[in-house]
Image (cartoon, rainbow over all chains, first blue to last red; front, top):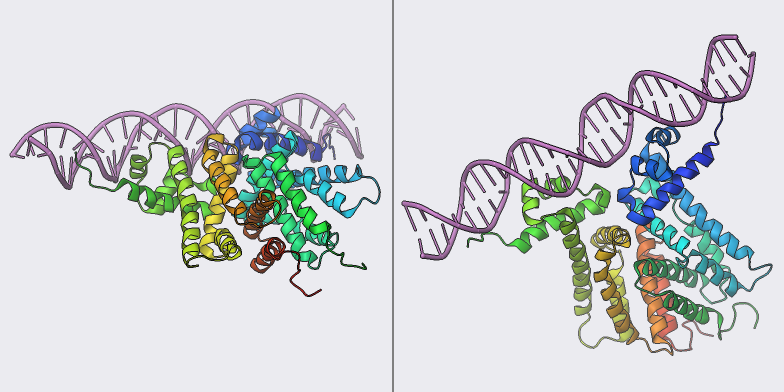
Length: 196
Length: 196
DNA sequence: TGGGTTACAATACATCTGTATTGAAAAGGC
DNA sequence: GCCTTTTCAATACAGATGTATTGTAACCCA
């Protein structure tokens, strides 16, 4: 059984090209031939690694998600051990927000896939960070009387800031100021949930 | 100079068909022929009222926005005169959120156009102005120390909740609870809702 | 040293795409 | 009544699209 190529590596190469095209020109410009050209390979090769376009799209979708998770993981790791919950939360969120060029490109792709999966329920399960998991994780770090609601609002702020940043409606400074203002409400002044 | 048809009316008819297709199958399935079929007219007629596809898309984009504004306007009008700022704000936001079937359909289209305009800067300008206006309006209704930041966060919450609702990550109850929790923080002064 | 399998490349194919062209019916203004 | 203009419908067209088919070189295992 000869297997000379690393399938995952080739798929990643193609998915990278897809993300580049999607970030620059949108998902509508994503065709097998465009992706092949962008990746510098032939149409036949793309077909060899993805039997159908939908399969390629699905793979790229999870690749975007994994790239986001990797960015968050790296930012969190840079915090060292036992960071304060507020710092941890802010680090996670700023890692998700499209503040760097790379994150901006990824964000555009993620937004495109968000719209894509909004009309393709079979593709919706895979996208983005697993919100439910993240929600309970964030809630556990929020010392208010209603951590679930406040966590839900915080994630919504994160998503909304991301969208507004991508659209150019908010500047990075504006977005971070809004985020910090909310974190202030969560973490300052009020008596923590546990002992006084 | 014979002019037997109301151009705006015909355009609206076609834009309605476009929004139906976009809501059900996404912007990728929007082609001149699909829209013509959905509207029950011929391709030639669509071409007669929109010289190019981009022109049709642009018209539909502003039609979605106007529909959303109309929904907000109606909800606000139903509040009567001199509503409390918090009620007014909550009414505006719940009118924007995709909570009804109609608002869900519109929301999907709006999300699709958001991704669409993220890679077409020439189409993004209208939304930009809209947000800036809404932001200062909302800020004027927020009695906190930093109304600008808190208003920015509130709009982000609105947008994020909308996205999560469309994606099915939040239930309507969850979204409204998160919204109300934030409004509590803004409006309840320092006294929490639950007794100390 | 084969035989079989993999990894592509090339190309064919039917369908769909946006746009342009042509033509004809209808309806004002003169 | 005629003539110009609008309102469409039909069709043509070149290019793109996803997928299927075929061919061919390379490689591993026997």
